[in-house]
Image: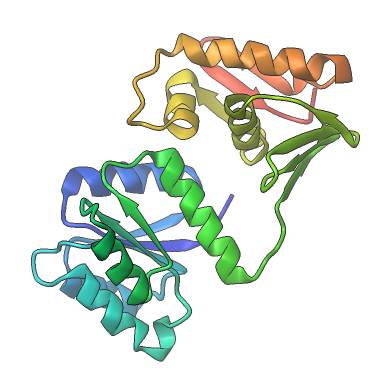
Length: 229
């Protein structure tokens, strides 16, 4: 579980609620601010590890805040991801040129947002680590390759994302609805039984290597991934 602190600066309550809940489930500590003034106060109280910054705020422009913060020594190395409904190329260039580390347009899925946060934090830490290991299973996240005891497994992109999620959330139980949100994205209209279909496929891929039992069915709730079989 991560203990990184994220400051979410967003004036729309529904978006703040959705993002805070989802990132909290990922283990992040979330501070919320609905405008520039409250964001400045949050930063003064606790310096965040990353900032999610909405472009349009009631009291100022997110772009102006971005420029101001990047001039401060304490925030120069803090990653900032812009959240905005603006889709014009010129706006994206302005944000990136002003110091934003990434740019995500609304509406966005939780899956995409968490992936971008992980990528930005990995770049910011200077870490080149792109492997996830649980028991005999190893994932090369950058190459999208899976291995069991160094033997390569061919799997589709959805099975890979599902396995990556499980391997980064070991021994935690997730309902089908939660897995849809985290793996497929909250904005995707997919039936819950789709999860079962991909679980079956993933188990079939792992069974010849005696790893299928790592994906455990929790009756009446959902699924858990564990090296304790």
